[in-house]
Length: 197
Image (cartoon, rainbow, N blue to C red):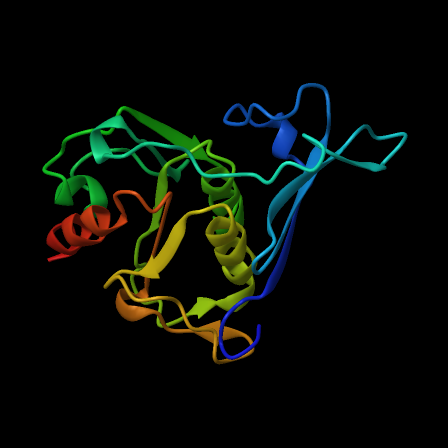
């Protein structure tokens, strides 16, 4: 992080290739995603357990977000514990309408950032959690640069860029995060505000 913004990010995802949401691996075990400001985002996969060498797939190609232009044609990622119904603020904000596809992702927020950066999902919203007063920097900073370098956008719930001015924690507006391919980001922010009110 330089001047409150991420400039390099690396995410290790040892079980990435065991998830049904990805299409970048077949019999491989895991992946590492890396991004450098101004240089793009790259996916490196771990080939197998006996030979944990890294191989860039596809060689030299920068990863990019999906091309969904609207909410209606998008793929939204939600946590495994969530359902796309009116109990979910983003679903409530869209009046219960569903995107083209809803996929559930396990684990922490970084895996969901990775899904957006790779184009497996068009958007992900980290909703505010009751009694939570701050978010952990390490749960977000690498994901932010990977998504942004893939062509996507990441903001707080009011549409402002995230600022990482503290070592361990940060307080985005609304205590939540909107991650998207950038094409209908403002629509998600606006509808989410309705769903949270």
